[in-house]
Image (cartoon, rainbow, N blue to C red; front, side, top):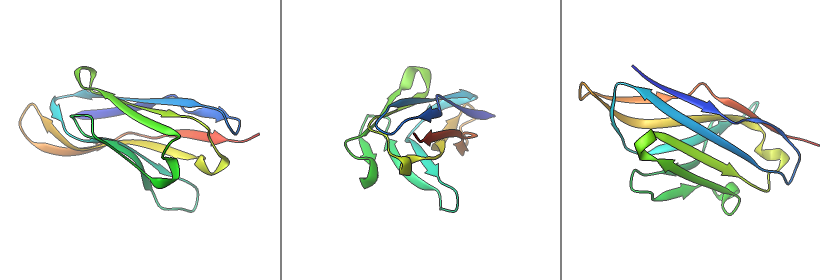
Length: 121
């Protein structure tokens, strides 16, 4: 019904940059907040950054000043620009839209399939 598809992960050296994107498609009427979570091996999934439809942002302390979240409401797409990457940023990154209003006026939560980000020399 609603799909989130991430792209842009990969391997980067410490200090490098990567840009992730997540496009939502399907029977979408509107999307409220969108966010990025990550899960490293052996650890719980954690919120990295979130953005409201109006553009208000929230970041995990560990990424403040290094990551920037943005969105394009017309394209139902959210982005994550990651700079000054560290080995501890290595994880699978997941896009999330916790409240999607469908064209049938139902509310659902949607997750992407995840994209691997590896920071290593």
